[in-house]
Length: 258
Image (cartoon, rainbow, N blue to C red; front, top):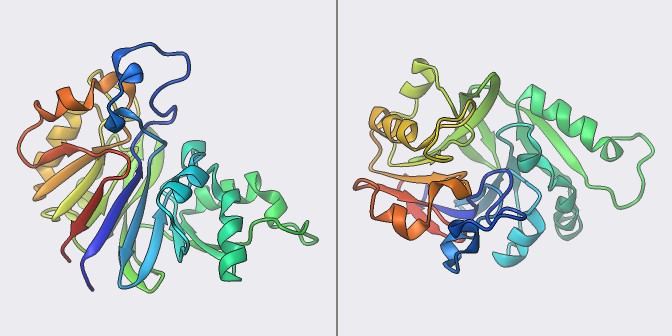
């Protein structure tokens, strides 16, 4: 497996940053690193391109990053900020003349079938997205001819999948993680992890909890994502975080050794 490239397509929470109607310093910031679309990542390895999550900003993200080919989509869970852009995969159906492979757990696949019911009708309207659904659970699987592993975290009471691809572990919307699952990512080279805000949250890691999580995993470096406007300015935070830990930002490209 060659080196892995990860592009952060979006690093914001479900509302994005700036938040509609908000006048806080982060939402008014002119620093482009404080402009955050909904969380999503693009992974490239061995000539294959895999999208992690397809939220409401998918079209904008694909155009901004000039993505012209996509081999598969991994979905972490069923919340709308992670699946509501699936209809825009039609563009790849047209270009690639095939259905798009979607990999997710059972609950997420049921949500996709319910929300995008028109894509699965027997007598489908012309031009609907073509989605080929693949059930995955904790453990190893293949997507786009890449060997990878799904690990489970809990988003309050909702199971969410994270993904380990070579030296990369990508986890979002986590609050807790079973010790046995955490063992499967210990010592990973690069950890991507959600860090919502400073204040405690019932279903997301806050900054303190995220830093404690990093200590348990022991990666070489960590990038925080799924960030709200309540975590202060990027420029302020980068001077506060410990060595090896950074805030991700939209458009950031990271090379990860296998």
